[in-house]
Image: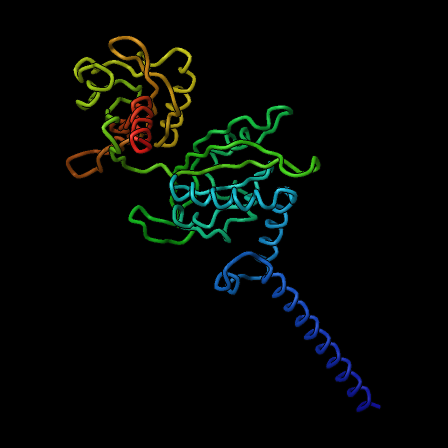
Length: 339
């Protein structure tokens, strides 16, 4: 009886382990089939674990429901155009749900923040952005009836696994990278579809390069008073550099653009980098021109034995683009090309 009891226990244990192995095998087959359905490269799929497969599958399902099936051909064309625009604009595309989940990111996101598309999709954007920027993100995610297509424009800080020398590091040692995000809220497909936030995200560089003759550089105190301006400003706005010293940029700004400039200045003080958006600047001879300023706060020099650390910023560096002359130049070039 004792031997028979032992035999039954072994047989039962063997049958249980056999059933468990079969269940695990079926489960693995299901995950492999699900992984093969993901629109990813085979080398990327091979590195995914089961939770990642589920997370990405849910994200792609949500992305699919956001698209209108009746416009499939148009979507392909739009996708091709989007890829071209991303190559030109030096940025990446991000789709957010109104809860803040990153439903989709273009695969070139790793070029800018060092994190793969598959590492981010399905996660909440609040897990990767600076806590001080969460309220601004929530305000932009908020949808009000009748204003879904309203423009969204925000500057946020996101974790980056790239060092300043473009080397990769782990997420625990991640730095903050400043992104300028622009887009709008849209509802795609059927009326039952949930709205999403479509954004193009461009990292703000730590240093700026003059791209054309229609730009000038300037330095400012933290209250935006000029301490230096290069000679290009004379050709573009009519002022000599000495005339601008000590004057505030607010004195040159159009009254209706004061709120835009104030928001830009606040972002600059809080996040060390910002872009102003388009605003009007007074010309010496009268009238205004449309400009856009890209700025960064230059930190104080490093402490040494002879210098104490004051923790105060040194100055604000601005590169201002005069947009009117740029547009005229582009139109003229296009006309000459056609002619």
